[in-house]
Length: 335
Image (cartoon, rainbow, N blue to C red):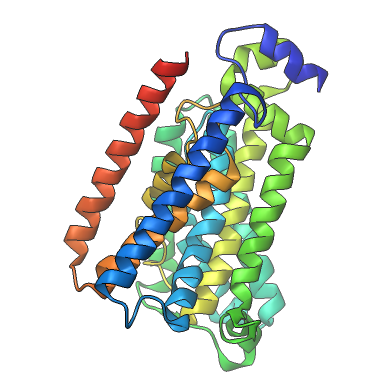
């Protein structure tokens, strides 16, 4: 607590946590995001009343949001901490492929889950080492990991889809078993969000994340080991990729080098729409999840209305640009 207070006194780009002026701005933004979700729901009810409000469609939206959402939680930490991670989609694919090789599957579903989590976390640690101790620019380091991770996944699988064997149905059960009408993977997603919120808002690690992202030099002078903390942020992002790999294996019953294609863009977009500052030091888990739900519902509406993938990508790109412009305008207004 004292460390973050000292960091706040040491420079103009202060760690802007969930309290104070930026915290109140975040609450207002959350209301705007909720209003946007309501508006999208109305559009869905008007354009496809027979499909949009069905229980199967709503479960489909939540299931899709769960996989990307777990990655978005890790991405939120990284961006608040002043970094960025372009490798998340590739790491999820690599973890899913590694966990579904016949050698790994022969040890059973628990080992498969542990393998996916360890592969994701290990790759995240490598990102952190390159950035924190190798002093590489996060964009370059994670871009290299994105290319290498995707290539390694293709090599391990021979560019073939690997099926989860029937003996390992415990993983598939995460998608097929329902509790109160929702698949178990939605509850896994909710648990990750809850833990992420607690860590970011109620722990020293979270306060240090805001401090490092807001002003790394001030954080260093306050006694925070910035390099170690940066390493831990990327390890956390990799851990989320490993968990997401388990969820996508459950949804698709496969491991594939094509899993997670463009997930990094969806996650970054969700974080930006949710109000997290790209330069670090400000953001919330709740905002990121609301941004993710907006993106997921938009994708669902495009599919229900028969619009092609190209139109979806154009719309997503436009939304990202608008979100960044609004963010910059908000900063100029309140600085």
